[in-house]
Image 1 (cartoon, rainbow, N blue to C red):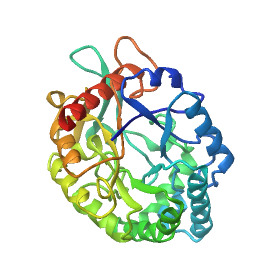
Image 2 (image 1 turned 30 degrees about the vertical axis):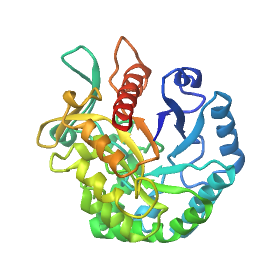
Image 3 (image 1 turned 90 degrees about the horizontal axis):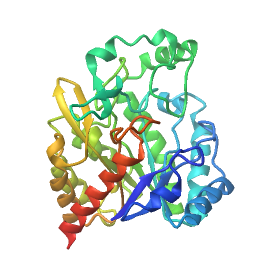
Length: 351
């Protein structure tokens, strides 16, 4: 297992030098954040990113992520050109010469969604939270300006047109469009030496009337079956999947880990964070240890050890603690504590 840490490039207030000081962290998870969605990534751009990371004594372990253009998810006529660009980006990753994982998602319009970016917890820290009732009160007529920021922000008009286009895309149609995408990208990734690792939908249920399909064990197994290749795998995100109490994460690990695909089977990357479910489709994020939330992190890591997982792992969203400010969920302190917790668990499990 390689312990890694998310870094948002030169604009990230957390320098690589600080990440290197976290014991056990050897890799960085990053991306080219200045490339427009749908454009091809260049070898030069990825080479510069690799050089920055390696210059700090770390390794570029995961690209997270190359966003999938909405026209691909919608199955629009222009998708072939955009898929070609995506394949060019995957080839550029392989040409950089570092064996990396590509973490991506296929969530329509919205990436991860929270309704509260600073929920005050009893210990005085703040954390990301989600409430389905609060989601229903969000006014989308103003665009995405008041929502968490991702690769693309939409004006009111752009968002309205996009939501209207998705009225003709139900869950099965979205599966068809995902299969179309993977049938063209997976062979390219296999030749390039890049492992694809889809991220589960977060939260793992439909929002704003939009379908979400990567939500549970059956969906993940269907996903890897769309194109049966060791290059077609998943990101096991304990927080996303853990928001559904019926998801048995250790069992999920053992099933996916038993599939052909190298150490860990089809689990190519792991996001480890904890969540506490407080009601129907209501949860908030917590510190990483098992006792703090609903995810039994020890048993998840035990299952990962048992299936021979040898890929990158990162502590995911953390609380904002000790007066730290900045990007919600991505402060240094609590994610570093989470990384150390994961490192300690793994050390104890593997001897």
